[in-house]
Image (cartoon, rainbow, N blue to C red; front, top):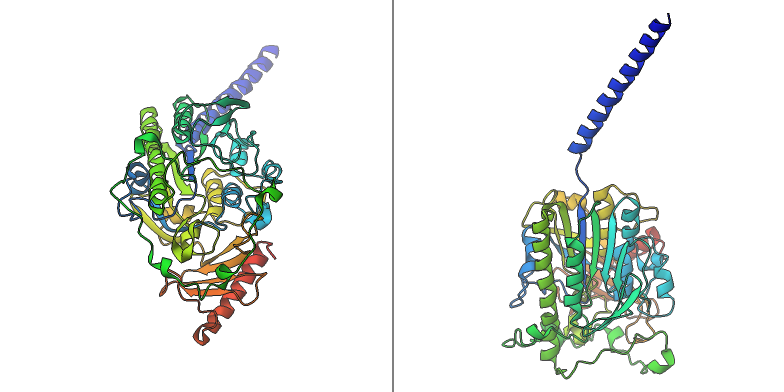
Length: 479
């Protein structure tokens, strides 16, 4: 009987072992068939318009490596930021929320560093989901260069930083560096990519370029020297329909705003301040960014990780070079300020060489990455996943979006505004200015030269746009 009992137990044990082995084999096979989570490289540049790439139609700029992202992936032809200003836009990329919710509403130094330590960001959530995360570059929310939650590796600098010989915080240790900022950021990026990674990685590369003071690398100092600045047609705008821009405002004493105003700008080191020089130096700065993108492609190919890596290239806002009398600015609700480049490459999802006409926003990046990686956001998200549009050019994303800008102490000329943009129209509302609102027919007036706010033929449309603006504010808690 004892032997019989032992035999029965052995059978049960054997059955359990066989069952466990079979279950494990099935699980391993199932996991082998499940898609691998992609690596993610998010590349953000500063103050770059949507039309400053070769692939987006610029007449002479040379950006072959950035263009490659679009040629082998997709370009969103109608991509926008919700707020055309550095700090608010950066927080919106990270959180998927409008500034009125995440509260990084301007570029003032006071308080933003504290707020940005509290943001719930997609790097934070992907790290919790098993990603190795790295931030390299310009944080620019507050004057604080210390590591933010959600990053295993951190390389950043105070405020705007410097193009030449910057001081950089590398994982908690501040180091005086020699060299050109863009090249340094590119090299640190390559150092990270060349390492062996046991987990999928998220690399957030945030360039200082192409921000003022627009100092190019020495090797690009004379690039495009045969070209010149040509004022856009809208430079002739007499502003008769833009009373908000014609207001007389008292000058700001920046010394009395210490703590709110940004740090003093880096000098131009003798480079001319003509419109020609500023315009061309802006593009020359982009050349070093393009060099870095080419190096990223090379390393990913060498590591065999290129096609398993989602590459995103975009900008924190657009930039005006003379439109409506605004040269070297971005704080207004016009197209040149709101529109940004947005290119993505990930062949496992995206067919090469595609264009998308859907309106894509900076608040869409976080939900897109959550959707792609299967990560749940613990906070309300205002953006929408672009994954359906990546897979289907006809996918419906949105028919309108909310834009907003809040008063900055250092720039009283630019009043607070809220705007709604549809596919063919834009309504700009100035809450604190009486009788200065604007309405544009973007289909027939893409340069926004004729304000139709008082046109009898457009009052029904104006009513609808006002209702839509109120609805968007209500839906996102912006009232």
